[in-house]
Image (cartoon, rainbow, N blue to C red; front, side, top):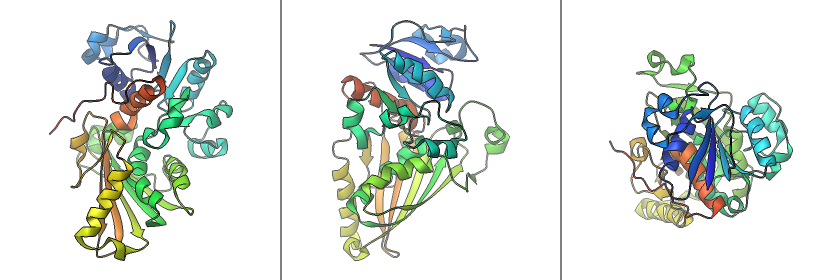
Length: 343
């Protein structure tokens, strides 16, 4: 199968190339990059020398599937002509994640170039929408923060064991902001520093509520707070919610019950691992796993869920390949079997 990558020069695009290089069913034949057009891929990324590709300004040749790793708005503008040619698309940007055009405009500050694709696109959190992904030609890859938050909360929300008041406290490495230089990703600004941002509402909040709402019996009241921390990769989300009947979850039996509930929920999902101890971001470095640890705070009657992943793999490129595998009928784990690099 011949595949193209739009904007290979970003972090997600280069990570896609790294993962796809060992995919037995895929040949990457066309790659683009706005600032590096005309250069050889190995000039920009020496670690990808084995791929022997030229970065072009536009896609070329006959392609079966295209990944877009452009920023929002630019990505939709690039993807729509590809879709009109009958080529399948996995979009890593936010352009097709939200179902409502006015909500997209509110959170991203631009009008969507074609609202008709918002209804057609499948939200590509494979664990929740595998059957829809399988038959789709347009998959909207989830955001990195929402992937960790939704996977951390979905079993509890679906089981109806928590109240509608939920807090998600998430921390991300600097690569989540992309390669473009801003004041907040300067080394001297980030190093030995942690800070919260988007206190008035992060763009990923509507994604989280959109995907959790259908699992809930009543509207959710969700607070989502993000922090930047001085590391390259990784997201760790701490999720808190009050249990409706805390007496049902008391003692060691309660902790075992919550582990079983989560393990049963994800029993058929190869890339969610429910673990018995709180996970660390380094334990996901370079692989496609989301590690989830649910626990009970017996003193307050609250559910606490720790969820972590690599924002460039399960939070971006790895999940995109996972979606491609499902769309194209390949085994879901293909090219994604790598273990984390630790420490």
